[in-house]
Image (cartoon, rainbow, N blue to C red; front, side, top):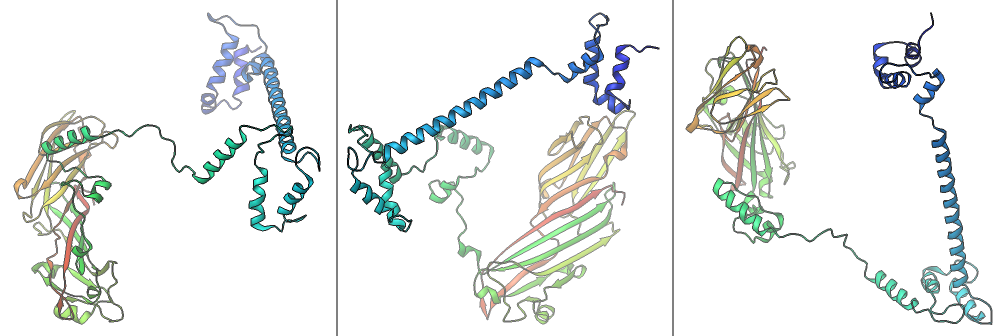
Length: 465
């Protein structure tokens, strides 16, 4: 049976007749059908070769135009090269002498110019090159003895440009003054109790009274002690703690010659029995075990100046304890699923009221892009539609707001979809009870500064592990 034109065109464009191939060649198929069938369903008398030519979009007129355009470009390039060569010859004829004794430059002057280049060779050196460069300047008298009025002007302008080169770039506009905006911003910041950061120039000049003064080098003291702890916690949905791990490091930085041989007395707390402490191998073990003193073991290897050295590390791990002092706060979650939605209630309680937690965040997975309806919240929330999570923010958690909750409803009937929740915060109070005491060097007291930070490495609520 004779195939019609549309049917015969499909295998030509799609030999394998697979779904991916047809989808890839969809535009060409539609274009071929449009060439064969007019509006209303009438077939057009056209050969397959004609259809293929239309698909390839070959046009004799377009090819002729392209060829003509290329010829014009080549002709323009050839003309430009001829003009450039003609201009170069004219410049060379204008600068070279017209004869040896007639009108123009005399033969003696030509010989003197030739001597400036060092005779017939290039042995004239740098001075000859500098002197001969003047002979290539534009002459103020042309070959007919007429004075060129623009020669001196060009020489003056070129010499001035060479003497005073411009170092500034293009200016797009004049810098606008920001006095009104700064005044308005300071008024708004004062109303909202926001501290504005000052610019670098103001901080250096000290023109503003609100600028925060830079800490001088003397305030760093002889040594600086830095305590850094990381916390890992895994709890059940009802707040029961399954796993707690604390890792910490004490870093000592010397800022003076006396600080290199510092003897740091550390006061041990009651909970130190739960921690496993490991001093640095370069620390005197006897002084540490008997007196809890951090000091260099070898006088030839003192603490370096300006470089932090981890002098002490510790680790603590607790499992399956209902009441642990190393849990700063507890979090409980109460999801109540309905037929099409779930009402979720999450509550936190500060277990250590002597601690202040900063940047407290609970990230609740939703497993849906639907927007939750916040019924009640202590703090602020942020719905991340792309990640399908709800983030609950509380700036500071301390004894004044030791407990807080969030209550929301969302179109998600699965209670397990809201777990595991992630908790994060920071605190300036470490969990280990280890504080610096007397700090001396050869019996002389030293000035010491210290800081501490506690960060959450992981805090999971309702994890399956």
